[in-house]
Image (cartoon, rainbow, N blue to C red; front, side, top):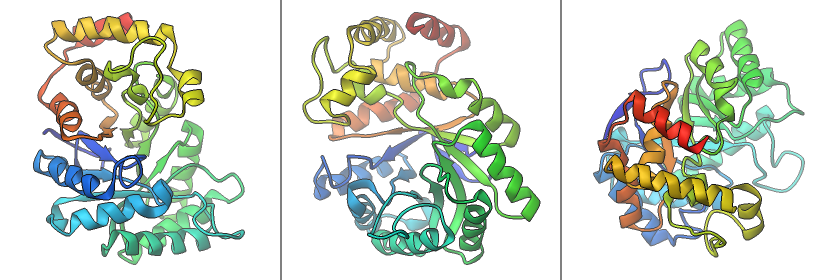
Length: 311
């Protein structure tokens, strides 16, 4: 496993992270979730990414149980807040009140003394960014959080948050978590350049386009049990066009002695501002295939060939 600094911070993370969206205690039972986490750690993964809303808090619970048998000082626990976790007007959002309460709840579910990377799950247009950054800064000063990051922020939203943090001497975001893969390259337009300028690293999700870039689906076949419902799947990448691109990618991957999934992950990691890719897994075999991407390399000519092939 290869490790990279997260942005300009001193935090070193595995370039492949294990994520808990629809994996820990949802589509995967808790016992298997724990075994997958422990298996990933044994293979060199040190970054585990969840959110309070994943499986109504149970993803954090499963991760917390897995951590009991792992060396805490070698683990980077990443979670998020923003979504609705309890009834009433304070049950969601990025107000100071919600953030402080949500953090306490996450610490209890995770059974840890601190969160290594606490992230804004998505923006809250109804709360001033000054209030959000103040709350995150307070959590860091209290020792409950080590680093902070954001997810699903645009370049402008990230720049605004960093500007406020600098002006008020608050802690700054060290990471961004956008959707990014061969079929969805929007972050390259504005977000990645902003991150490069600001020294922010990216931990990207959906690097395999919800499984389409794994090569496991065929034309006209949508997953009956996976990351997307049939309607969502078909509206994004479940079309003949993307299946054809995935098939072409598979042929190229074979030339490079990789699987389709490994090539897709390696392609994402070629971006200088990408610090890690988040993968999911429902079996040890699937996890091992994805983690093996860290043992491969992709030179500039190969990167360009892949980019041109997919278009």
